[in-house]
Image 1 (cartoon, rainbow, N blue to C red):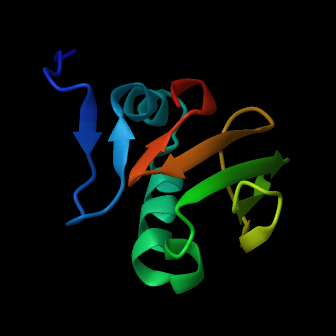
Image 2 (image 1 turned 180 degrees about the vertical axis):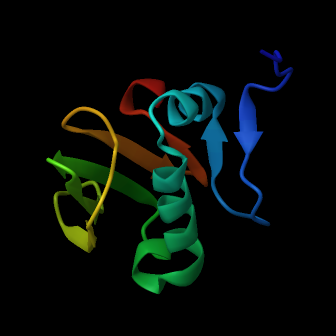
Amino acid sequence: MKILRSCRARLDLRDRPRVTLFQAIVGGIRQGYWLLDKIALAQQYESAVRAEAFQVWRLDVRGSAATLTCEDGNDCIVRTKAVPFTDFPGPGITLWCANNTILLPSEY
């Protein structure tokens, strides 16, 4: 395993959210890179999402399907998307997106 000198790994999208190193590792272990991509692409293509400076992203897994929800931090839903198939383990995960960075709530 390579040791990265930077504490943040940049997504391959110009001026798009960064992912913390820990989240990049978790993405690899938990097959979660697709989730990070969905959050990053929403910043670029969805104006309602982009308008929120702070976002709470929740992935709720039920069996082999899931729901991905973006909230504004005050429990107001900005976007919801059905994920018809996922192999993401466990009941899901909550991520925050703030200051152009995707991170775990414990990393804020």
